Structure formats: structure tokens, C-alpha cells
Amino acid sequence: MQSRPNSTQLEVQHAGLRFDTGFEGHFPVQAWGSINDQRFYFRWRGRRASLTVGPPAAVQPRTASELWSAITGATAEEARAEVGETPLRAGEVYPEGRRVAEETSVGDNLDDAADVFQSLLAQYERERGN
Image (cartoon, rainbow, N blue to C red; front, top):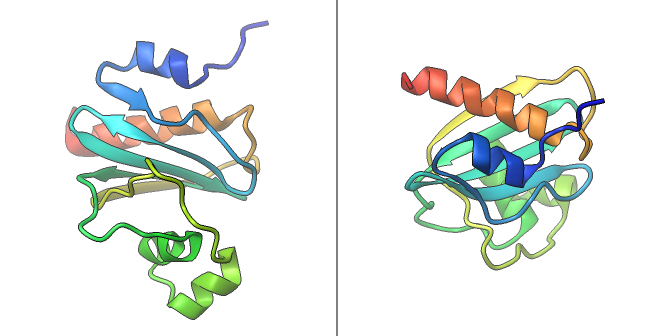
């Protein structure tokens, strides 16, 4: 049985890809890092996954609710109700740029996170013309 790729294996497979964090969390699964000179943020919650790639945002979210508002456009009140006020950790740099998303056939989980990330990365690269 072939094992699923993890963040370290993905770095080997994709030149210029570096993870600041591996795949972490549950509901949502998240990862942060860089692709060449751009920042990325991967988020998979339920059956909805997204990858945002771009330069660091001019104003960085400080809490989970500010991050949720940046991703979805939700009001501050809606975001606080959805995800709470947990502070983000140092190094979690949210990019401002193109966002690709997809519905997944399974709910968020660490076992499938690398596969979902790879699918979104391929979509991002196709849209960029790479």
C-alpha cells in the first residue's frame, strides 16, 4: 500500500514550495507557507477547501475571526460567531491574492489533506498558465 504524501514530500515534488507548518488542525485543516516568492494559506473545512496565494496582505489578521472575514467577506459579527476570537500564531502570514477553491468528496481530515492541497495547487498553476 502506497502512503499518502505529507508536506515534506510535497516540497520535494514541487520546486519552490515550502511549508511553514505542516497540515494541522481539524475543522479546519490548515497549512501556511510559500510558493516561490508568494505566500500561501490552505484551508479545508467540511467539504470546502481553498488555497490563497499572493504577497502578504497589507493588514494581517490577528484572530481567527479576522482571518475568516478576509477569506469569506463575512462581517466581524458573523465571523466571531462562526470561528471565535482565537489569536493567530506568529508566522501565520495571510496572503492577499488569487484564491482557488473546490468541493471535496470527503470532509476535512489530515490523512487526505496533502491530496486536496495538490489538487488545489494544480488548479492554481493551470489558472496561472504554468
